[in-house]
Length: 285
Image (tube, rainbow, N blue to C red; front, side, top):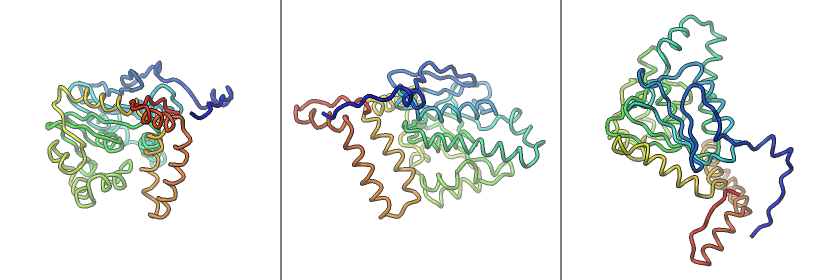
């Protein structure tokens, strides 16, 4: 076993925090056994986002990089729908009245939500039922893993409101998930992608019965949270960073990343458990 170092309290104070007790204002937040569940909770409107919820989600995902008690995240919606996008009355209406600097402030805020989702080390599992449109489709897209239902309807509908499909990273992410041609079709037309079609296209990892969707997403998240979470964070980082690398650069980056993981106690635990013919108990260090 490797020797555990003592972390300077001042360093820990600025870089480690617990978020289980976080009190969300604009959605539901629950942490259980290292799995955080974010529930968009405006079911009467199919869970649209507002200026406030955008900002709070952005800030919360930003804080997750420092969390010691959250090791995986599930994002879902209440009332049989995921998210209907930006609230028509609370976002779309006001945007029509804004000038360019304020509009850019808004679009940068929405993009920053995607950036913080990708930058946090925790794997994010989206549990998508019913309507998943606009910014809701982007949140699902920016997650690491997506579970859907046969009745899921995912629409990147920016074109339908007179906007470009290049919103919150869609033109970068979506082709990597489902291919350039399929992404082009969805972004040019804004049409809904059904659940079964979404699974065939690779947008959804699997389809679940609506009544089992959240439980299955949380079960996978728990499995990930009980795994080598430091190594999982490295995997997520490399999956994202290697988009912009050559093969040679990626292989070298992975060599360095894997060497770092070999210094962890989890790697040592796994070896000793294998020798003892036991299942390793990972602790994320």
